[in-house]
Image 1 (cartoon, rainbow, N blue to C red):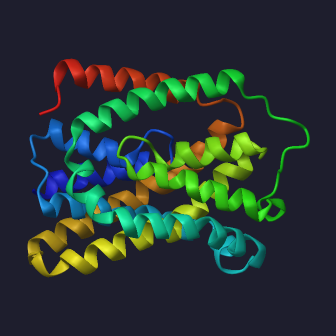
Image 2: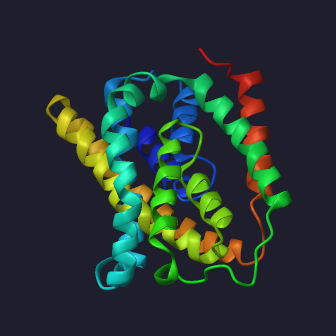
Length: 258
């Protein structure tokens, strides 16, 4: 890895983390385009720079995260299944799934079809939950379970949580913002767990790459979050579904899985 790679990865992470397109999948495919192998450092780097995106949510939603007790309780309820299953399957995900380009492409393709089908059949009701503080705790817990599916790279944490919330009966803006907030403890835990096991093997230069990736991830995530909130007020996710399908097919033909 060099400085250019760190910048590119940071930009890709920040732009894709909160969209229903899978940031992890995009980072894996970015590594393929750049001709980089899935080393242990690269896997840890891809996890660690998510902390830049975490900071973006903290800056934009600090009041809800640290002041609003009702929001905090629902975030905790959603984190319970995520933390349990994430801890259990951590080694399997990092050792096998994060190195599989084939898994990413299949997940992107299948997820794209799912998004299009979901938006085709989904109809938001007037009685849908419009505020996070009005969300039943059962909804939060089920959304946390849905989030664990995103341990498979290419699935998308945002897509899993948002679609689950819409299915349960939440309004689009409410579940999108809850998905942002839920990312903070989830991604912080994933980053802390990974770095606690691997940081001793990093060189000083590699820590510099992490800092650069973190910075660009933070800046681009702020832009992506603000843009996504405006987008969902006018459009659905069909365009993201089409994008996922086209991207997966493009890679199958131009950069087939190794």
